[in-house]
Length: 131
Length: 388
Image (cartoon, rainbow over all chains, first blue to last red; front, side, top):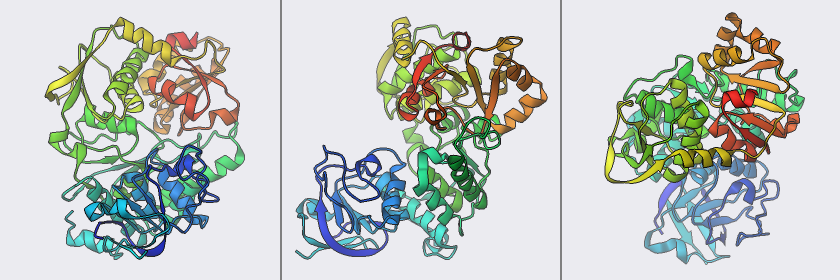
């Protein structure tokens, strides 16, 4: 599926899908990579080494640094797919060198299932779902 | 988005890893906001300086970025988390100070001037009308756009740093004429008697306007400090980046059918009450945004020869403090038991860790942020009220 390249790099991994936005500041423990907000659909799930699929980020711009902290602690997602990127996650992904793609064609965002094997190419803006 | 040959070269790493990353950030922002191209900017003002707000992750990122990142345009810093000279006598934790100094040094290594103020326009940094800049402190952004007629979006600390390193910003938002149009008109019926009234007006209007441009009617005359205070509050309770005052600002453009609201005596009273959560305080803090020379002169006049029963912080830019020292105003304030605080302010320093629980302020912005940022109960009032 063709999308828009937001952050460079290429990575492959298992999809972890959230239908709700994520704030990396406060909602995710940067030491463990576990979602700590009990109201979030990904509560108690670990985002480390996953291809994290979620609509968009939210919260304060300092949230970009939280993503960087996750990366430094080895708990960052391998790649990110957003329905439509906003600046907090986009900047966070770039400074943390996490490949990121958004705006997939033909509502592709909704087709990615939890646990699917996904390849994200942030150089070309392409996502491959390999089941 | 179109990138020039030179911009492509930077993106491909020909000017180093940090410049490449900076260009990647701006290109991504350009895509997200549908900018057609990047444009040159003449200065950058960078937030994300206080160790309290950016933490270890921010510090690590900046030290890494400073390895080969160098600014291309004049670049300035927002307030840090402490007075860089007087932190020890003010009771700041040692470990905090050590990390804070590392952040300052990383910025300095990149060539950023450690002005550590939210009011660069009070220390001679005055972009001209129509000039494109990349500033990130929300109260400085709104002042530059509204009072100076310069053009900037509300940058984040990182995007402003990316602009400092590349000298560019994506061409969208408030850089374009078409977006410099008010959608909310506020008719000010209440009489604004003091800076705190301007702060209350800003808090009220910002909450209604959210991210939209605001136009004020019914304000006859304003001082620089009143515009500064009004803008800071608008940008705190809302995400406002630009406002007009009829008959005062050069720019005045309103959409065909704007939302119209009134700010009367009732709204003023109610907003003032809502900003207050305490009847007393351990600390009186003035200077959000940083005090001008005129404000400090007024404070000195009010406390001359008196002994204050509470601590008093007068927050300002270091360059203004130097002037205030020379004029003998620092001595007057210190003799009364107060102190001039530079490089920081009550909002971005760790007030709660120094042992304060209740703070008295005359700033709408400070009253809005102190409960969440510094866990303070707030006494909001005019300068005269809070000094009492």
